[in-house]
Image (cartoon, rainbow, N blue to C red; front, side):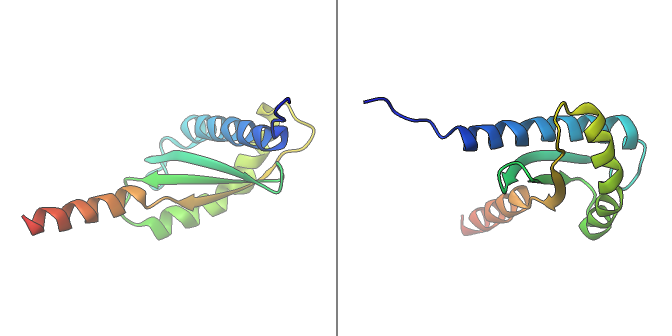
Length: 117
């Protein structure tokens, strides 16, 4: 019996990965001199609703995450417009930036473990 692959989730994962790469290039090309978002790194992307929405998870060296999030929200429309010109698709997914606090949580756990010794 042949195993059927879930091509829809594969397509979603490929789209999310492509969007992540292209948005990272856009941020590098257009906003590298910006003090607030110059240090933003995209660490993951997840597509939702097929390929209608892509959540881009980021990490920033800037300690003021609220200002980073606000700036990213402000430039989302411009980034999506630029994405449309680079993406070879009929439809361009909506994008949303979300902070990924995984490194912060890992750092806190390391500190707790160090204090136990």
